[in-house]
Image (cartoon, rainbow, N blue to C red; front, side, top):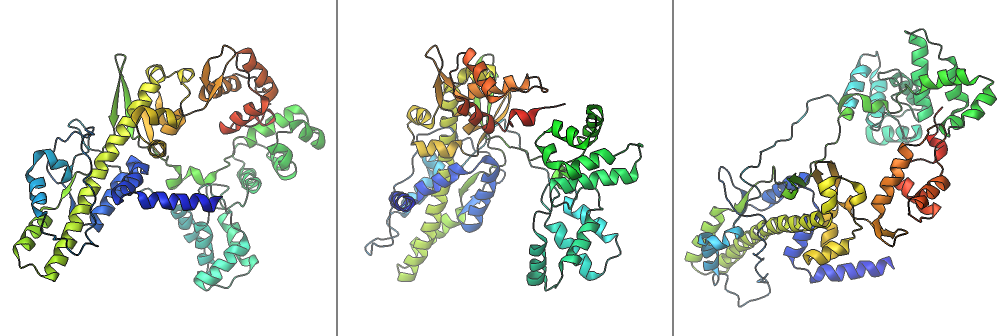
Length: 494
């Protein structure tokens, strides 16, 4: 079946022109990656260049212009590459065709924003610094730097020791045994922040508790928390607190005190220092503003350079046309024309990308107008890709590419575009409601529950039925999992 789909996809791609394929790829790229893609194209095609110190007032939302028909010159022996040279010169002088030679992705009131480059030390740099403070021979130091390089963002060593041994042998020609690697790993586990270098969560928490017990600056007895993590970790993760109290023979008061200290620990020590502490900021592709009850949409074009065809290549083609018509001259003309064509196609594809993104987001904004005006998630209407596809007259696959990896900034937060698409359910009154609305109600119920007696899926099902949503328990469980909400037992608090 997968082979059949692959064959169908290959046939479809063969029918698409190079311009269409280029546009498809550009549509998938979010705004924050578009600048890199443009720079890559400029590096590959010298006929395409960035406009400097010029302000063009092209309308990025004008969707009237289309790509010129692609022509295949390579297999036509009778083709004279000079025959349509005048078109290039006309394009250059014709204001109506100016979009073919340049593109402007900015509005006059856009603020130019450059993403700051942080010189903050990385998590690994901080650990390597601490490694340098230890008196280690060259072999142990290399083992240590390799281990640090294999720690994940949370500070854990998820690779097996045998894998570290093999890597050191094959990549650095360092023959080590398990004891040597473990010796260096234990040294790293003494570094700050406490818990780094652990191989799992249980070890991470134990390292922190043992460090606290050793320092004991606040005169707190960590014996019981250590026993709970060391001997009853499985019951602890499943929140079987009654079993821990019964097996350990302690009182509920003692358990509460131990639990309080355990909950102060950091399960992801790697995220508390260096570059790992920084948030991954989302750059929205769109912004929607409520201007006195009227929605206004803007397309983020910041840091997207303005493009045009290199004048030197136009002049070069002009010079070639005046020379004797030899075979080498034709080859040179073909080369230059191909570069200019590629530059034109790319400029037009960028323009079409902006147009497609704008009209698609505009249709979504109108479809979900009540939500964007109020921010009330219960106002979200059921919406699938087909609804927007029919509204704007574009293929469903195109809408999917626009929705993928794109974000919209609203007065209520920044959201992934695909989050506004949802299937529909019918309530007791026969009205179609969005599954997003159901999830919002489900989340509200769980946020308001008594954490000592969290609501089970059966109870949640009954609550939703009372609100007029006749949904099966397994559907409730599916929605809860999609919202990353654990089962009732794991939500329980003492």
